Amino acid sequence: MSAISQKPKQLYQILLQTSKLIWQSSKSLTAIWALLLLLQGFIPVGLVYLTRFLIDALVQASQQGWSQESLQPLMLPGGLFAGLTILTTLLQAAATWVRTAQSELLQDYVSNLIHQKSIEIDYGCYESSEYNDKLTRAREGASGRSLALLESAGGLVQGSLSLFAIAFLLVSYGLVIPLALIISTLPAFLVALKLSSLQYNWSQRTTLDRRKTQYYELLLTNNMIAGELRLFNFGPHFRNAYQQLRKKLRLEQLALIRQQSLSRLGASFVSGLLLCGLFALLGKDLLSGSLSLGELAMFQQAFVRGQAIVRTLLNNLNSIYRNSLFISNLFDFLGITPTITDPVEPQPTKDRLEQGVQLKELSFRYPGCSDYILKDFSLFLPANKVVAIVGDNGAGKSTLIKLLCRFYDPESGSIEFDGVDIRRFRVNDFRALITVLFQFPITYQLDAIQNIELSDLQRPQNLEAIENCAQASGIHDKLVTLADGYRTQLGRWFPKGVDLSGGQWQRLALARAFYREAPFIILDEPTSAMDPWAERDWLDRFRAMAQRKTALVITHRFTLAMRADVIHVMRAGEIVESGSHGELLALDGLYAESWRSQMESQTEPAVTR
Image (tube, rainbow, N blue to C red; front, side, top):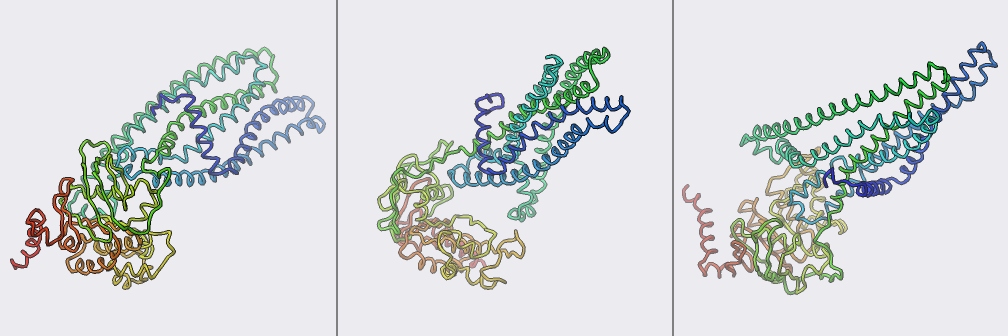
């Protein structure tokens, strides 16, 4: 949505959505804020009105010699004036507190909405640059702008009330005065409206560049990259890339600010000329004696406050326009609807597989890509068996996992669990049937117990089961040697944290995968960070854990694949060979050739020594 395309109806809808957002985040505080708004709207008018009586009473007292009797008329308006002044200060303090409290509650509420939407949306969104742009825009001051938008709308109401009362006071001096107030502020308003549009367009246009600066900063400061950054010495390269991009953004922003300053200066000059003409007309009335001192003081206060109110009103309108542009990004993000959804009449799931997993003529390509990763792909994974898939990079193995987890739906074909299309299950119910070890395990900065139980937080904590899974994955012996055992903080992000090696993190991730007692296990390169001795030990443990379960193992290691009941060789999105280890060696095809090559590469160093 471009800045120019914003229409009154759209602004109204955004204002309505924002009001609802703020009301849901803090109902009681919003009600108090509205009350304070009304009070602050009428008090300035009361102060202006009391000014006339104070000045006239002072003039009369001075003419009567400042006696006690002559000062008596000052008491009531003076007391009311002082009371309203004190009340104004108290209301401002209360409004500041309410705004701060609202801001905190709204920030948490909006953050929760963004986090909830981030969990709900399709996995494919995370692989989309457009989604990342939307997320960045939605997170940029969304809560602050939401509150600012409502404040501007409230200020518009408050200012309108004050202006109506001020106009009532000024109209007795002629219509030209209230009209002059409004006209004198119009140039500044029109300029501000145009500059808001320019600022918004710049923000939209530079979203990708600003995300790149965040990425470069991550590369320069993240501990996961610190090793390669030093070894390959690419730190200066990304530092320069960051500085160049920041320079470009900085110069563009400074150019915008310069344009804003010049435009505002011109608008102020025009407004000043109009006001000078108005003061000349009033000076004529003052010299002719048609105005009393009290009336003059009231007029001066009314004029000054009226001008400030009109300026504030126009600024509020501009602020509403400006903030609505940015807040529309938040609502655009919250309006993203997932395509991976529950069926209208979901099928119940079973605790275990009896037949197996059938992939029927799957065709799939990633959104925005013309090339198919899988085309009319079929495969059967029998229940209670360990199936291995081996193949070179780019064969489509990782895509297969994403489809099996229903991160994506195929363009055609189906995936069936015991003859039931997985799209007929509730998404979360179906995914509860699967446990996965992804190729690159996440190093959660938690203790070992929390790390392992993450795979099934609905399950009551079972320390015995956690320890059994750790033993099965081979990480138990390491964990018990730590200072606080399984309660030791892992990772270096927080105090007293202990880091693990790559292989140990992988074993911990395996324990997490085992902890979810799912009937279907998917392991993507489960031993890639293990040495051959650790791998052999883990394989024996895995076979024990996989009993009465269906397992799919994606691997490049033939020493792991040979332990599977069935091995499939995958190349360019197709299964080109299938069988047991012995059958594939006897076939003397691609698998046998790759097996011999891998075995020779493992034994060659020992021969050369």
